[in-house]
Length: 140
Image 1 (cartoon, rainbow, N blue to C red):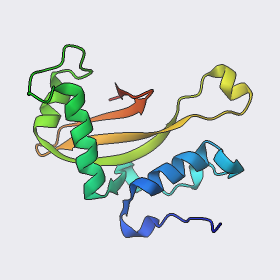
Image 2 (image 1 turned 90 degrees about the vertical axis):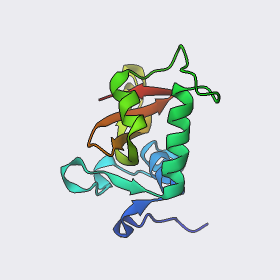
Image 3 (image 1 turned 120 degrees about the horizontal axis):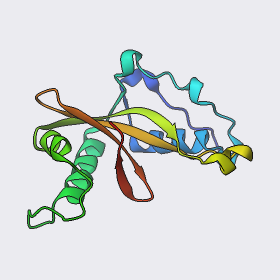
């Protein structure tokens, strides 16, 4: 089976490439890939995603916030700032990978890297999140 390569030069990452990077960072199939080997764009700009991924991410985030009928969910993870960014939505970018492994897992060399995304609004407002155990965790 040929080793799949990630083309960083094209300016965006596909969903398959994001999953591939995550699996390699977490040591799936003993890839031995290090976080420092990913050439993230300068100044924390992050990688652009495909239009399909951006729409899929936006749909998932709005579904966390509102029901299909448009009413706000009582247990939604968003505050006023995040809701404003979703109302003014422009794009989502992959900013980094965060290691969510606990102390015990780190002692045994187990890694739990998760993609860390930034949602950007048309007015320049942003928030950052990651998905952990199927839930949206706001990080900044």
